[in-house]
Image (cartoon, rainbow, N blue to C red; front, side, top):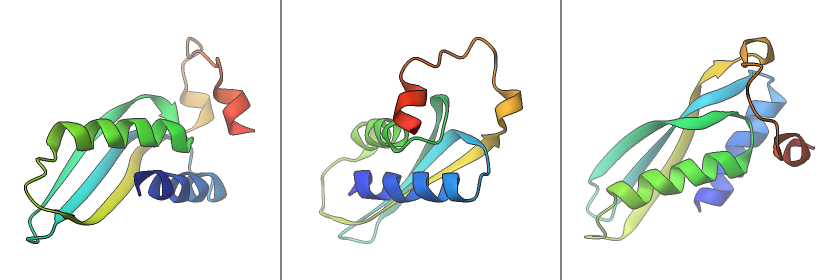
Length: 100
């Protein structure tokens, strides 16, 4: 489910050209209607679903306790920066290939 959500978020970020996201947030609601949100900085600013998915799953694994079934999930990104603000030292490695 997180994969599908991250694909959707990535598609909208690219569609509206808001820049690269630096942070990600997940929200989780369980079968008892208890919920929590967690957020974290991404390893590097990105628009890629793969980068969003890695951080979303990391947050989920750290904080969900499996005491109840999952009722709903959410993913959002924020702290956008423009291309001009990205450091020269940012390593492009596979990023450009994945973006295409």
